[in-house]
Image: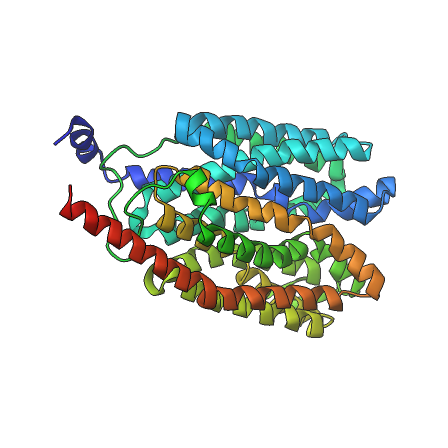
Length: 430
């Protein structure tokens, strides 16, 4: 037995859970950069009158820089380890919201969005990649729990942020939440590290790659591009809802109407934002766990199908405050799982060695999907409402659901047979 394996065997069993928990908390600390953004759009517009469409360009810039640079950040993680990348990311997310607190021009708002996106992407990509490497035996669940920190991390701060915006202004809210979130990530980054040989037990349940594919090899594989297209189709609808939920509620004239559910009474928009964050977090480990047991493609078909129905129903019945809260929850519950299912599938197919980089390349699909977010405002304005936007998003999810079983699953079966043939040849001719 090698010295590395002896060392790994002597490590306490708590190493993996600690890495998972630290990753989750880091994700919680960056969640407001995306999911809290919608609360700042109207106050910024009321102060500067730049228009919602112009302000939402900042959201698109954030998502683009958060996603399209993740492959580079992933390469840094695979090369130098997760600690330094997350530390720098924490510094950047703090700087971004400090700039937002003083931004008095659109270009400055856009610069802050780019800095925040780079920082959030560094934290997000690293934590997901670390979970994929530490938990090959429960990859879907671990990636889902980590992604849940990003999806549900802002749930507890929705009401405090709203309250601080009303009492102290959005500028002070950006400043103090930005400093607190950035500092927390910097401190937690010091605890992160990649697994050593023997610390991560292999999976005995799902088929996983017998070898590690480089990013270049992965980009030459049709499976990657099928997953990329599916990611864009599903991601676009969810990002539209994330960025536009508050404007939609205001246009439906229900934002401030009281809703009583689960023993609570809150304004419809506040209730929807809070419950959406919780469900958007819960869906990631839930569907990740389900995919560990029934397969990735089967789980995708179910989730994307529910998302298509949920978006359509929200367009039809969302004018009723109670149904707006419930149906927006369904939309977020059936959307957030893409952040556990796709990285898990990617690592199953292409191996662990370059997992952070490869998953990062696939994650850029979120950035591509974000390009459609400003078009939602344009389409809504051109058609006089949100119905056409919802219909397009529902159709995109329905197509992705069908592709999961009709395209992705057969391609993976062919890929697995090829891997088996290579493995058999190597065993016969070592």
